[in-house]
Length: 122
Image 1 (cartoon, rainbow, N blue to C red):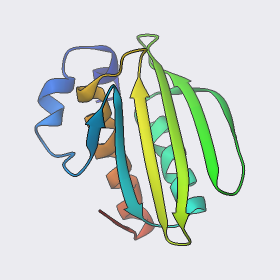
Image 2: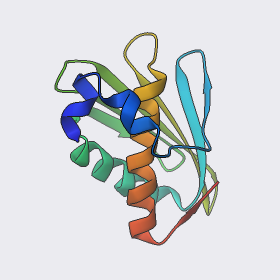
Image 3: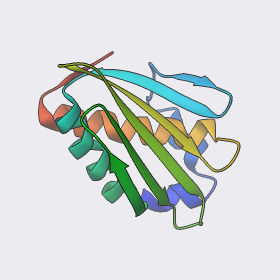
C-alpha cells in the first residue's frame, strides 16, 4: 500500500474510508479528540506506514509541523494544533496545490494509528 502515494492507486484506496475531514484550497483538515503528544506519535507512525520520508520537524507545546517527501518526491506538509488538552487539529497538504486523494489516504492511515492509541476522532 505505501507505493500508492506515488502511483494512481490512491483513488481506489480512498473509497475504503477517510470520511470526516474538510478539504479547502489544497489543505485537508481533521480534528481528533486525542491529546497533542499522542497525535504527534500517530503522525510519525503514519509517515512510517506510508513510506513518507521525514525531512524536518519543528514546533512547541501547541503547534508542530512535519515536512516530508513521498517516494514520488511529492512534498508532504503536516501541521498539528493543540485545541485543548484532549483535542488536536491536523492539517495536511500534498504538493504545492494539494491532493485530495492522497490527503484522504493519509487520514485513513492516521485514523488507524489513533485507534491503536485508543483515541477517538471527530
